Length: 149
Image 1 (cartoon, rainbow, N blue to C red):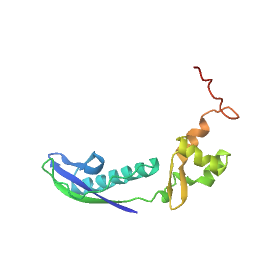
Image 2: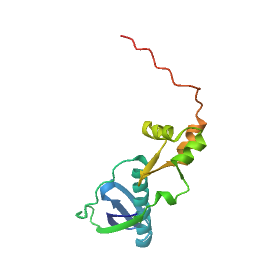
Image 3: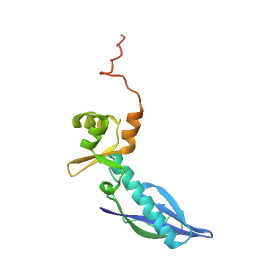
Image 4: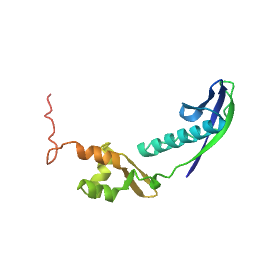
């Protein structure tokens, strides 16, 4: 999917500083083509991060005025998490972890795994699977701590 957000490009002596309004982030480039490339990479990273964490993306406003004496440029980024090799389906995650698919869903909800849902399909990061596999866990259900009154 293509995402479009506004940036402010500020020319300085040693290149361009680039500010992404709706995410309150910045990057820089040596010249305008480099700055555009860096802006697109920053936007792609921010959108991917929101999608993986299940956070809502900020609405692009397209009403910004220069705040630092630069010029406003709309930049696009194509984001397709399914094309990344860093994700597997929930059923593949279940197979890799030796658990059921509903257990993977619960692990995602509890924050033990990271992933995202798209059109009814759930995808899980390989990094979170590997991190979970490397954490020793005891067998059985965790014991509840006694409640003291």
